[in-house]
Length: 296
Image (spheres, rainbow, N blue to C red):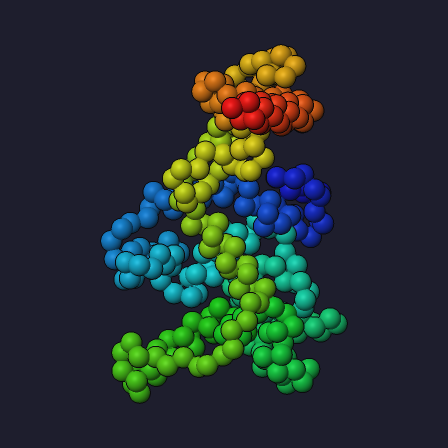
């Protein structure tokens, strides 16, 4: 029975080719870090890039950090680097590897009890089950712009659409249909994958020594826990309390007060005593001033 390489949990025997049980475990693994290193080395600043999936050269805008040359290569790219290592779920309401599902030669029907397998899932869902493609995408978590067809048919339709737009709208003037924006499960999965693959710097935590990926240049810790632990373990000066005269570990602010000749206290009890003494001193000074004024 296979085990997750990160948390060690067991898989079902039908998923023997998977290595991780979830995206969280894969994102924190050394395997993804090695993929990030390879991409950081191969990444170029020029406008002409080489598609890591099909090997073709393509042009992209300088402000856009595109990964592949087309949508089909984009799905294959993420399916190979993410979905093939993560445990798959193909129920209608709990799909998690969308790219692996959409890059199959034939798409299976997600309706329970239906054994259909074919090229166009949306056509089958509409004709056999009476569910529109839009309603099915909402139920399954797909983006509304995602075509529920196999990879081969998707590439053919994509080439046909490009020729049609060039003929009727001119090059580069493709008209997009107005579709209401909605955060789907597929969108969230792509967003998490894009964030994970776009982390270009690998650093070592100064507290625990763990290697982590980040975009920032001034980050020294892998988590808030390591940051707080390092701050708590930072060496502090030791000095006497102005009330009980016992030595205690002072903060940087208290150490600065001692250098200026100001009193510091070790705790809440001594603080209350110091406040009472200060108020009594202020009262005594006011009484002496009043007595001195009356004598004049």
